[in-house]
Length: 185
Image (cartoon, rainbow, N blue to C red; front, side, top):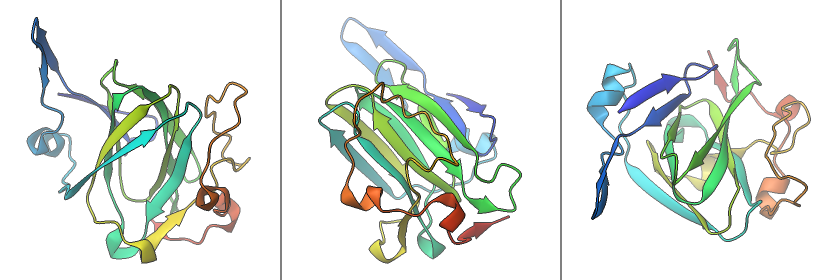
């Protein structure tokens, strides 16, 4: 397993090895030992799986606060997404900046998004399935979001002229300028 830190070093690309033959392949998609060697001590407690039927489906930008804040490890098992993490830790030198990465079933890369980041993705192909590990259970009372298309963030969702498919909830999140200081460094 190879781990690469991105321009915001707390966000990492994880490249599991894949061993294939005429039967298919085998891949160890998570290793606590490999994460510990990279300086990340996290205990994942739940796996989530989403299916987005149409390309151009945007999910995010989501995060949880308080004791329910979540580290996430995201991977795509069918299709492709542009995956985005926005630093929302007040006082961080990268506050308000984001990193993005194309994750696909083909490239087999994963993205580790730590606590203190808003996370979202846009599907690039129909029938895309995303599986992600989280370090805290879903807590509706501590569920929050950041407006996906806040001009201050300037995120390229790679919609290529398509109208995004969004939930009503994701259309109503606050902009970065209106976001309370939920996290700080």
